[in-house]
Length: 294
Length: 289
Image (cartoon, rainbow over all chains, first blue to last red):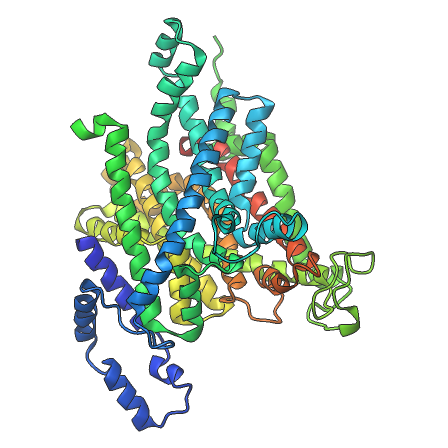
């Protein structure tokens, strides 16, 4: 709760440091000074900053995020419409990242210092170096325009989700792969793995039950962080694929100088982030009982 | 049993050993070559390119890659090779300046907060934690939203966005060094706080800072081109890597090269910095692995 208050304050402060007068931008410099004043009073922008902040928080707590200066529609309504799209894409991307990341990382660790290991790690390094907007365009070029397997843009079906999810998830997949590999190598060196092997536990069981499970503990914490990063990356990927999420909303709002929308998007993103981190902490306890009793 | 003689040890500092290790690291060497190639090519852009990067030639519209136009031309008939070379100057500078901005603020704050500790440290770290609650790119976007689109604001935004992570790293390294005996010794013989931080703490936290800076540079370049791609950074007709890719996006079907080939430059440059940064880390700071 104090975190949320702090975030709301930061968001508010951030937006109100705007040089340039939002009311003037909104009226495109055509209104007379009296008209500008009147609109300012209507929007409550003439009151002292602390009063504006208090009313912002009070209204935000009730789910009222103000009205878009541009479309005149309630911001909360707009965000509620767009959030499912962003969340859907982020979850799909996270699935891609987890499956590919853990898979590749485990393969690399189990074939330590072989060609498979080096190859996987080069792919992972390439993965963190890819500019997502470019990667997305290349995927569209290959899979939509040439092979015609998947639709290039839009958000109507699950098929539309595949390319954005791969684009958005590739960076996180690479990071998870690198961490899984090093964590797994660490675990494979542990005494209990050697004991299990000495007892004659077969390889597959050893990997799944003993090694992978314990190697996942540090990976779980980074997955939470990566999810937050995905929300940032979603802004770019949504633009590439014409995906109607909150990232696209934010970019449009920036061009329109639509302050209530910018404010709300940043606030909502931060709240999601805090929530995800909380979830990760809980999950952490499930994965690693030592934390619960510690 | 082999004993290292004092004579050979005295001649090999931490840095000498590190650089020797770095030279043996194939990835780091490859990364260095890629970086040098792009930096030199960008620096020499006016001499390397036959065409003006903003010169429009409508009769040359969408010329595919050829001997005359190695990377082809865009929707205005501008030579893409020339635009990519000139664009490198901007995209690389954006990354460098952004990192410089966060270093100038983040390093001193990290040093002071780590060294002083106490209530000051508490307050700073609270702010840092709060700040880190926002995804980095989103912070940058929010700041650009406030300052308005433009390359200069993009640099400031990415720079500011990078501060909290840096403060946290510098502080953590300072904490690890602060209680060493040589620091106590310096204090015992009457060294002042400023002297101790400058002469004893800073040199010992430099290695992780350098490593992180290289890796952050890769990220900063990516963020910079990303923001320009969104239209928040360089404005047309300025040649900038992200903006070039964005301009070609509408013509993906007719002229695939406009977006895809310039993007390769971004990918390779960032990969170069990542390779080099990974090599640096392995050579100088094995703890970070």
